[in-house]
Structures are given as structure tokens and as C-alpha cells.
Image (cartoon, rainbow, N blue to C red; front, side):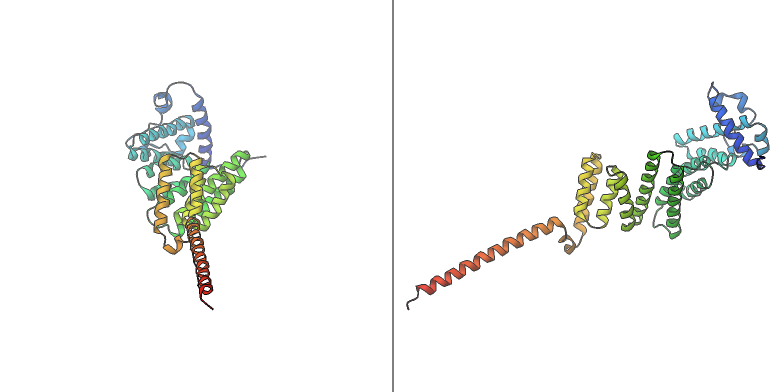
Length: 318
């Protein structure tokens, strides 16, 4: 059976993947020292995008092109580690231009923009990664969490985007899971993303649904406990918040995190109206005990008064 003809971009992508594998298997010096493989396609550090080989050039020398992309990625990663965000962005923009159909190019570019504090371009790059080959759960999570980092309220369109990406990740991962553990890990991540979105929106119904899933999948996970605690605070259910705090102590969360949870719980208690405070089981228990004590005291007083009246009546002469 004859295969369908491929476009030059498809052929280049396949050749690059094969050549990159060969390059990785080649023993020897670091990439920067592979003169024979890098000299054909020089990487211009000042303007990496301008030095991206054309498709025709890359097709004629796929192994050299693979080394060029690996070198660009290597230098971009090094720049990112050193905090040189501008240089990292230049290298990763060149990488995305050279290999535009692979998610890893845009994912790295997204990370560089995010590190530089350029939220709009980071969002654009992260979103671009979702529409290319090789997209992973990490790519989906990166996009959603980047959306949640936005200052101010989320727009309706942004909430819809987050919901759509999470739903797509859930469907794709359920289909592609290699085994039961892989499927469970993916399900936990998806539920966590839903909880993060629900917490950002302060939406109790969203938090209830995702927390229920996490309690079934990973009840002792620190993030599950944190979401459970956050939901309790949102619903002003301080008894449940105390139980979640107890679970956090049992899970041996860091002392700083526990102290923060305790302070927040105390603050929320002090902020609520006194009528709401009366509904707390602990406060209600004290009030019931006081009411019972008052009733007992009144009963004793009435009994003593009646006895006193009877005695005075008996003591009077006929």
C-alpha cells in the first residue's frame, strides 16, 4: 500500500526526530564541540532566529540540522538557568521557528517568557504548544496555571479556555494512559487543576466536585488536604476546617504551612458575624451547656421557693 505524500515540513519533522535520536546516541564531546556537525549551520548567538536554516537546507542535511536545534535548546536552557531571560527567549524563538510542529519548542518559550514576567507572550506560547505534536499533561497544566497567575479577575473567555483545556487533557490522558497507575496519576493532576481553578474563582461547587474526586483518589496527599481545608473555609464550616487541619498535622506538613493555616482559620473566625459564629459546633456546645446550667439553676430556685411558701403556710395558726 502506497503511503500518502508528505509535505516538506512533515518530512523535515520526521528527519529531525530520527537525526536527533542518532545524535543523542553518538558518543563524544559536548554539542558545542561537535565542529563537524555544527559548522554547516552556524548558530548566531546575537540573533538566533536569523540563523535558522531553511526547510530545503535542513532536508539536505538532517543530522546537522538536528544538532543545530539541540545546540539552540542547550544554550537556551543555560541562559534560563543563569537568569538571562532575554537570551533564553531569543534561542527558544529560534527553536520554535526551526521546529514549529513540536510542543517542546513552545513549552520552553512559554517558560522563558513567564520567567521574564511577560504574561501575554507566555500565554500565547503555552497555548501554541497545545496545538502541536508531542503535547503532554505538563503542557496542559502549565497553560492552566499560567492563566490562574493573571492579575485581577479572570475573563469569561479565560475561564472557558481553562475548562476546555482541562477537559481535553482528561479525555486524551484517559485514552493514552499506559497502565492503571499512569491513569490514576493523570486523574489526580486533572482534579488538582480543577480545584486550583475553583479556588481562584472562589467557587464552592467546583471545589466540592474536585475535592470529592481527590479524596477518593489521593486522600492523604498534602494538596488534597489543602483543598479540603480551603473548601471548609469558603463554606464557613470551621469544624471541617479543624478536621482538615488535624489531617494536615497527621500528614506532617511543614510547620510554616501549618502555622499559616492556623492563623488563617483564626482570622476567618474573627471575621464572621456573631450570628454565624453561634452556628459553630464548638460555640453552640458552650451555649447549650450554659443554657442547661441556667435552666437547672432556675428549676432549683423555683423548687426552693415553693417549699418556702408551703412551710410558711403550715406555720400560720388555724
